[in-house]
Length: 225
Length: 277
Image (cartoon, rainbow over all chains, first blue to last red; front, top):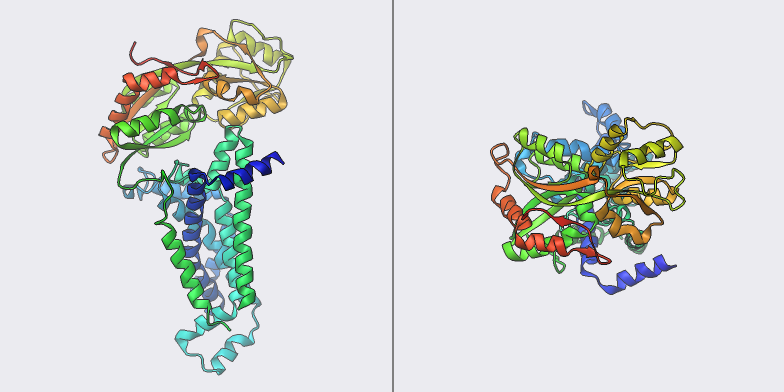
């Protein structure tokens, strides 16, 4: 009860650091999921609807990569971005860009695989129907995506949940720098390490509130359409 | 029915992009110059950096981005050139860092000491012992739970040297290598009511939350000096050497040293300045 009270008090207090931390989390996760969706949704459709060399390999790779732990993604991207690594000259380590790169790598397989799964479950007559209805080539995929918007949205939301809740990538690639790369999850991790469980739990509750509000809003929007 | 779909997606994308321009008070200033400091969890968890850095930023206009990790990792970040300056506590490894050509201009900053903590019941009977190594030998003999950092940090390095001094290589179910930071290890030690070794700064910062007490202190072997080292700009030309040196100058100068001296928790100093002796 005291923890819940502390969470409510923190949220109501309008603490600027708390606000900045939540905003940073949303920026990182929002950007990552946007980029991952731009690549992952078309890729998911392509993998099902087109046959091209390497398709099976990509499928297996995508499905296996879903199981990649966040710290491994962090470590892989770290070894690329460190000053002594191949992309070191870009100076990206411990910047928001590094976190976003890591999160895109983390979540792209999930979005792709879930979209692929959804397309696989689709009524096989749908593409034919669309063609029969005279859907032009350039509109064909757009129409498909519209028809599939429910499952596609679910894939994006699942991906968003994964990135906003992960700590391994953000910690390793962002460095938990105050006012810069400190996110909700890295703050929870820091507070826990300091034995400040109340603040950590309060932030956990805020994280759940964000996830809940977002899902609720999208659910309502989907219903209204 | 689906007319609104596309604008909605565009709106979502736009809002993500726009969110980058939102700012909260005190937020990261892109225009200001930044240096990256890799340091140990003890300086961060004790709250000392939160006292030092705003003053330095005020004076110099340079913002210090803190990456708080164990000493082992902080040194590795310095070796890779991922940070500009490191503030750590493991003298032998600091010397190796400088001798290896990775760092330049090492300076003493401050010290505190390590203490052995345990439950007030003290099943190993080490309370009041003068020699840390003897105390550890008693803990090992009684097979009481001992929580080790196990993370290659400065504290872990010191702990291993104590076991060596005791002529033991600890193993067994009672010896727990946690692989976590100092704060987390103190919390765990409290939960299992075991023994551990900690720097005094973290202990003082957290003792209100812990049902443990200091059982052994004052052995000269428990001395815990902190050093600051600039990453060698000849090895890593992209590092901000001037920024690093300005931070070192501040830390070891009158202002920084005074802040370190006056930093207290419940009236007790956490660190003792060393640079201007």
